[in-house]
Image 1 (cartoon, rainbow, N blue to C red):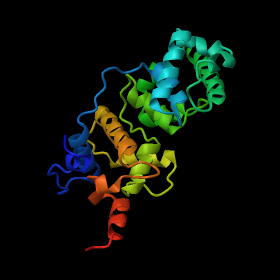
Image 2 (image 1 turned 90 degrees about the vertical axis):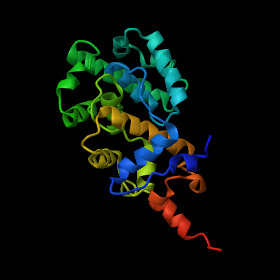
Image 3 (image 1 turned 180 degrees about the vertical axis):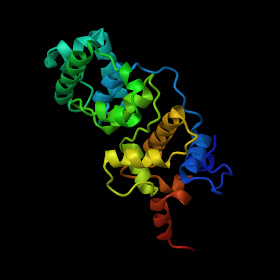
Image 4 (image 1 turned 180 degrees about the horizontal axis):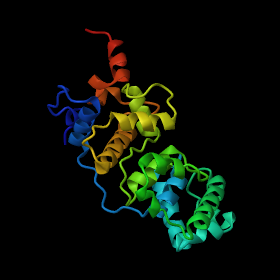
Amino acid sequence: MPAIREQIQLGLDFGREEPIAVLRQRLLAAYGPQRDTRRHTPPEQFVKALISSETYDSASEKAFQALCEHFRPLDRLGQSDPREVLQQLATVTHPEKKASQLVASVDRIVEQRGRFDLDHLAALSVEAAMELLQRYDGIGPKCAAAVLNFSTLRRRVFVVDRHIRRFAERFGLLPDNASFTMAHRIMLRLMPASWDADDLYELHWLIKRFGQEVCTSQRPLCPRCGLADLCRHGTALASKIPRP
C-alpha cells in the first residue's frame, strides 16, 4: 500500500479547478469514498451531536448507545432527572453540563412539538433551520449543521469541527482563529454549486480523517503530507528547510 504522501499525489494536478475540489480529489485518492451505511433520525442525531463535542468519536458513540438503550423512546429524556442522564454519559467530556443541556433541550422541543420530533426542519431553508436549532441549550453551529447534514434530513450544509477548522486555517481557506459560525459560512461558500449534501458529508469525513492522521494539532506530519503544495502552513515550513 503506498505511503500517504504517494496516495494523495496520484498524478493529480491543480489545473484550473477550485482548491477545495482539488483537495477532495486528492483525499479521495488516499482514503476512498466516505459514504454512509446508515443515517440517524434527526432526534437521534441531535442527541449524538450534543454529547459529542470535545469528545473522541468512540467515546461519544458508547454514550449515545447507552442513552438509546436506557431512554427509549428518546422523548423520555425531556422528563428525566439530569442525574439519571449523567449516569449514561461517563465516557464524554463535561458530562454534568451535557446532561442538563440534553434534558432542557429535549423538554423544550417536546413542549413545542408535542414529541421529540424535528421533521419540520426539512421544510425550512438551511439558514432558518440552523438558526432555529441554535436556540436550544447546548447546540452551536457545529451541532446544528450535524443534525441537518448527518441525519436522514441530508441538508446541504457543511459540518466544521475542530479538525476541519484547523485544516482550513492551515490551507488558507479560513482566516486564523475564525469562529465556528464564520467558518461554517465561509466553508459552505467555497463548495462548488454542483456538490450535494452527500458530497459535503463525504468531504467532512475525508478532512477529519486526514486531520486525525496527518494534519494533527500538535505535531502535523508535514513531511508525509501529499497536500503540502497546496498548504500555506506546509509551504512556509518547506521554505525554511535548507537546500543542499
